[in-house]
Image (cartoon, rainbow, N blue to C red):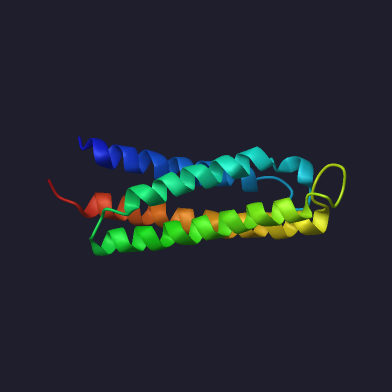
Length: 127
């Protein structure tokens, strides 16, 4: 068992799950989405992207591209959260939350692509 691949797989799947946990719920209800889960999703996604930097293969390039897309969308969602935080006492309003969750959903799709590529690469690799 390769510890480097285990660590990379762990972080890429953890990134997907934190992103999913943030997105799940009613898209326009701010109480269904926690800013700290979004922040943790960003940090884990950045770690996963950092682990992708050393790979020089074609699959590595696709994983890096998908990771960069997810990072960009999650960071943009967090910036929008900061900008729209003063909408109501509870944080962003329903219209703003739709935009934030939509961006995080795009990142979720990029993370799903990463996991599918990782699974495909793992199944195709021979011992």
